[in-house]
Image (cartoon, rainbow over all chains, first blue to last red; front, side, top):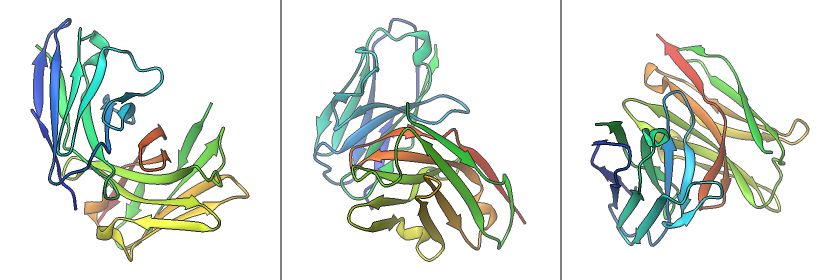
Length: 106
Length: 121
């Protein structure tokens, strides 16, 4: 199975900050990487797929990059609505999720 | 507007079968461009993909290796829905269960609200 490791597990930030979340795959997954946002008691919400393609309706302050084994989700100008947990997901071999990164208020 | 409506019991006895249904509106379970998935989430396991069904010229099924032998995902074309059956459950199967639509091998773009299922011993 392909293992997905996210870092950090928790990130403290302020409104207006630029934040970066990293996701590493245990083997190459090309660009088969998806990012989700999840808030307590809700289902995950799709943000980015194929490593860098923004899902329709998602604000442009979200961006994704990377290929192979290392990927990044960047949120510029962090907004109050962005405090949540973020997950990566690989699609190269069936699918597995990362352990999540909680973005909390500093 | 695509919506997924989950239903099923929130409490299951150990050794019994967990059964959940996901009713689809705004799409068809027979749509050849997508797959229909079950995912669960627990504090100990995180987000865990369970299995899926998809229609091409016939129905196809994929299951997580860890659950093979216990899991069945089945479509119901007459009701435009799909179901999860997980047999011989233990307290370790306690989790929030989600159904989701998948644009094949790229993303889960629509999700049900989730159902907390507790397995009691």
